[in-house]
Length: 347
Image (cartoon, rainbow, N blue to C red):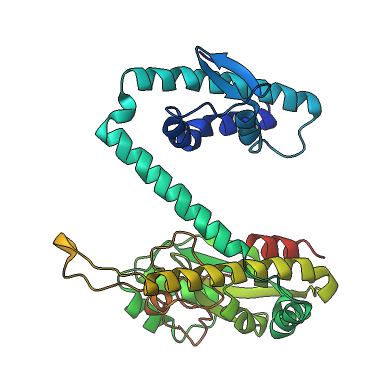
């Protein structure tokens, strides 16, 4: 059965929410389908054979609707969700009748989904227990990162970007050691068989940079040549313009608070995962019997927001050319979404 959906952007959100039924609701629904009914009298919104669909199921899926929908669109969206749930219920009943839920591969998928959901819920609960940043901590972060705030400067570059690290980068770096202009740098690249397009007037704000690179960029002046690694790219840029755009503490505070809260949450998760691993009796068996225990928390999917480069990032760093490289490897930038967007929007 095909459900007709409205065609505008909000309706696309409705469709995405509905399609999540297959990946999110299937595991929990299949596990519960052999148990007692989940709905109580007066809470059912539909019935498929002898199985009821409850208003709680509709409410759960409605949480994924876009914010700010008008009342009439919410009503329409909830009907779409009900229709999707009915369609799904017919498939679930088919699956149980034909014992698909007892298939070994399906059971493994259900168990894997259950483990993943519970592990993520545990991470969420641990993170929720982290403390809220204090005013002193917010002020301290502000004072320690004045180049992001009180002394914030936006820099325009003319630059070229290499899509990766060339195999002959060691030679290119040596050739770049004496260059002072972007035209000289592009000539070096061309001599080494690399054609890179020139981009003029590219604006970079400090919150888009790795935190440890911000003070280095803050010292650059018009005409300076800077070489750094950004993700998997090498960027060679020459400063063409700088503009002071300070942000006062009162305006920056909510974004700093959210950034610090995220960092505290990640620290709390990392600490607790390490404690759990340290206290557990872990032994590798079978083909993994010779494996050495890994660092606890290394497999955590909810990666920490780190203001400093990881050891791997340092190992992969592009060496400085002309003493101009301010950033190491793949160091995480400070552009936590809230902080980056927030600071960038404060003029």
